[in-house]
Amino acid sequence: MMEQLKTEILETENAFAHMAREKGLAKAFTHFADENAVINRDNQLYKGIDAIRNYFEEKDFRNVQLIWKPDFVEVTPGGELAYTYGCYEMTALDGNGVSHETAGIFHTVWKRQADGNWKYVWD
Image (cartoon, rainbow, N blue to C red; front, side):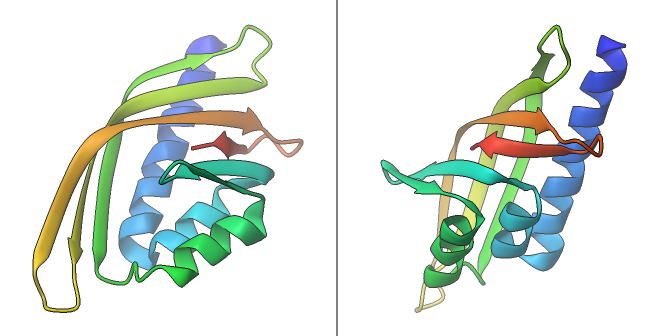
């Protein structure tokens, strides 16, 4: 059972990363967010789907490529929460066409929804 849940989380992470590449960050980060999700960006919390959407739409994330892959996944004994962490790489083009690259560690907390799908509650 736990291995199946870990597989579900990894599949969800892969779908999340794929959507971010194909449809953009705003679409992916709102699609995979729990209604009460929180993201921490630039030492500021954005709470709820609307705030998350606004964050990504207000920033110019059209020329950004974000790639990540979890290195670790754990699921709570009851199977209602899980977390992942791993490395990410982000490349962005500024208004002058200059590429800026950053890399780091991500940490995501996932919550199993009533329909069985996973949505993140913290990123």
